[in-house]
Length: 245
Image 1 (cartoon, rainbow, N blue to C red):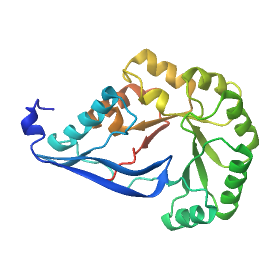
Image 2: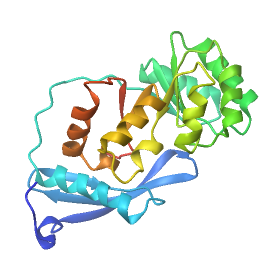
Image 3: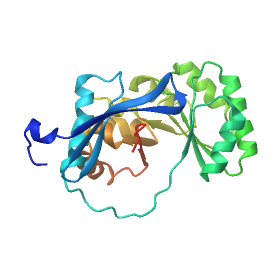
Image 4: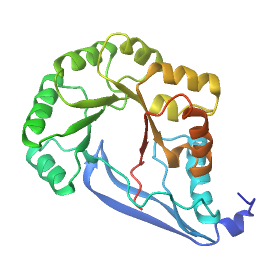
């Protein structure tokens, strides 16, 4: 990407705030900055809890989108999942059916595992051929993660995403359960995601790697990561980051 002076790169910006239809983990809105560049508008909206270091990656991605001619897309259609955060099962089932998606990403807290498993069973009964991607955002203890895996046996779970907070816990968990594991934060929030030793450690610890392109620094950085991953690992899930665009 061309090195730009700040007064040029940020010469045309607008702030925004968009209310969410449903709160997500006490987030009721998304806010950020829109940057207008040579190749169109881009969005800079890091999560509020992110450090300056992590937020700088979001900015790198936004500047790249606004000021860089990126490769042409090779696909006109991509498969996606529905997402649910509500405890209202009727609303969840209705929303998934309207979306036409056959995969549902659902964020759970692990505070009441029996009830959460019961809810998943009800959803699976009401939506034929549904698959679940369960995201705990690191909320579970190791024991709770094992308990969830045992109690949810038989459910159509593609993977549980970031079940525990630390990579050490996830490594141990992988030895204890059959449910596939996806890793997000333990990968995305490290200092250098392109470190080959770290990548090797991550791939030994998970069955799926969830990659959020904007928070890791943009398309160019993702393509470098892809080149390191694909020869040995292809279960990569490209995920959004609550982006408005």
